Length: 161
Image (cartoon, rainbow, N blue to C red; front, side):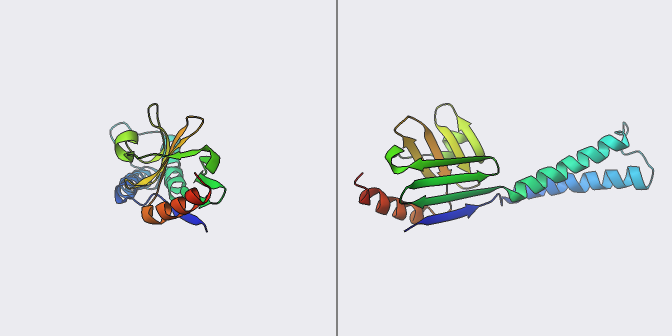
């Protein structure tokens, strides 16, 4: 028995913001490089304009490929916020606690709170919160909380915890 989930950033506001910036930069780059008209009252040098354009495209591609992969299995929980961070927690380290992810972490992504520990989330307000026996606190966001709870309960109680 195993639980697997893969999540990505799919919030509309993220893509609208990045899309708007790319449209604006595309227009400015076209105007300045192709039409030969300076873009704005204090235009950037062409090389800087191209670099900014490429950086924004790079950020959009990076966000498009970020994935939060969660696997709950007999040995424990694996979380991979690819390509930024990986964590593997064995059942011997885990104590399950209640959580309030948005209040505690204030957003999505790989987040850190001095009080609440590390969070791996992409959207929503539901997740698996873990307090390890060593004192680390970890929140793993999920869009399938009922399935995750079912497998956690099944494995957790089979292991005699």
